[in-house]
Amino acid sequence: MNNLNLVSENSFMTTKDICKHLRISSRTLDRRKRSYHPFPEPDLSSSGSSNMWYCHKVIEWQKMEVDKFNKGKII
Image 1 (cartoon, one colour):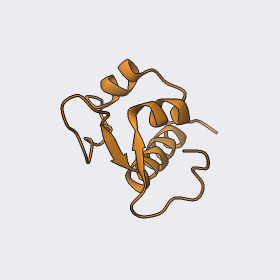
Image 2 (cartoon, helix red, strand yellow; image 1 turned 180 degrees about the vertical axis):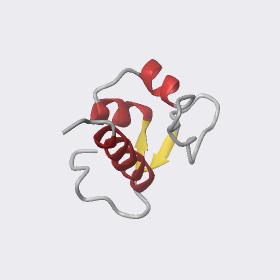
Image 3 (cartoon, one colour; image 1 turned 60 degrees about the horizontal axis):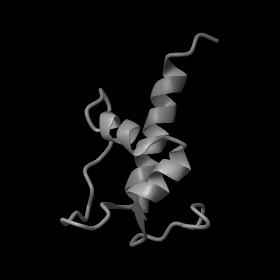
């Protein structure tokens, strides 16, 4: 994914794309699936290939994470 600002409804992101976008490791991504606000399960998953998520779901999750972080800040 070169430009995540242009997200179509049917675009997919792989684990590698998500990790690069969020600047985290695949292990951290796996941990986020078990957190208070879990990362969504993959939309496509098959043995021997990359898990894939719809881009809009990843971005929605990221927006909720930012909101959750901002609510915890003392201004």
